[in-house]
Length: 414
Ligand SMILES: O=C(O)CCC(=O)C(=O)O
Ligand SMILES: [Fe+2]
Image (cartoon, rainbow, N blue to C red):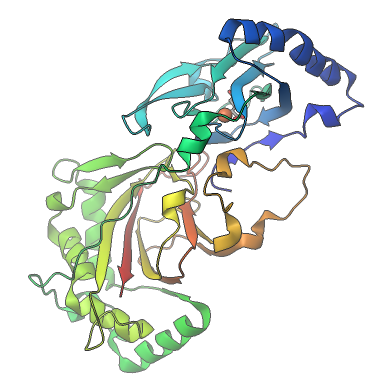
C-alpha cells in the first residue's frame, strides 16, 4: 500500500501455458546465469522472475531489494517496442539509482536515471547500498513493460546487517512555558465548552479518533493559509529524508512568524496540553502527569512526496497524534494507520514482500484508519504501541492547482 502501484504477474515458473515466457525463463537459467556467474564471480543458484506493467501514474518507491539470498537484480525492458519513439525522461518511469551516506541511508538527489528501452537488460548487485526506485510513469503512450527478478545464491550478508539499521525518530520536547497564546483567540468557541469536551472524550474513548471540523476560527485559518502560500522568502523548508523513509518538506521552525508561528506555539503550549487532557483523559497535564512531551512539525506536500513504512515508524509507546490541514486537496497527504501485525515481525520486508495481483488477498484488513484531508479540521488519533502509519505517495494525477498541502503534524505522550 505504501511502496508501490503497478501490476505484477506471478512467478514465470507458474505460467506453463505462456510458452514464450517459460522459454525466457529457461534462457535466464541456462544462459544468463552461467554468464553472470563468470562476470561477477558470484555463485548463483537459481532465478526468480515475473512480469511487471506500469501504466500512467504507477511507481515503485525507494527500496534496496535486500531479502535473504538475493544476489543480483535484473530487469529486462520490453517497451517502448521496436518502431516506437524512444522513451524520454519526461515520460517518467526511469529506473533511478540513489547514492547513500556513511550509514547506508539513500540520499537525494537521484544519482543516475536509466530510461526503459526495448531489449535492454539492467543488472545490479543487491547490497546495503543498492537503493533504487521506478519514477512515476507520466505518459499514456505506452505501458512500461518488464520481465524482472533476481539471481539467488548464498544468504546476502548485507541482509543480516540491514535489520539493525533504524529509521530516524521524532524529537519530543516539553511543553513550552515561555509562550502562552490564549486558546480563546484561536479556537472555534464550541471546542472550549465543557459539554463539547466531554462528548469529544467519550468519542475518543470509544473510537480512538475524532475529526474536529473548523477547529480554529476561520479568520485565523485563512491568515495562516495565505501566509504559507504567499511567503516564499522568509519561511525556510528542507527536504526530509532519508529517501527510503520519506520525501516531503518540513519548515525550519525558527523561520516561522505571524499567525503560523502563533499556531505552532499553540500546539506546544501548556494550554494545549490541558485541552488534550480534557479531550482524552490522558495524563498530559495535571497532578498525575509525569513528563508529558510533544513533537511538532509543519510539513509541505507536493507531487512525488511520500512516506513509507519502516521499522522506526512503528511507535514504541502509546501516543496521541494530531493532524491539521491547510490548503487541503483531495488525494494529497492522505494518512493511513495500520495495525501492529500488519508488518512482518522480522522488522524488514515491505519492499520485498510484494504481493502479486494473483494472490487475491484483501490487503485492507490491516487498515485501522485513513485520514482524509479537510481544511481547518483537526484530526486526533490515539495510537497504540506498535501501530504504523504512512502518508500515501502524491501522484502527478492529483490536482494541486491551489498549491501544496500543508500539514501540522504533532505527537504527544504522557
Ligand atoms: O523495473 C525496474 O526498472 C526496477 C524494478 C524493481 O526495482 C523491482 O521490481 O524491485
Ligand atoms: Fe527493486
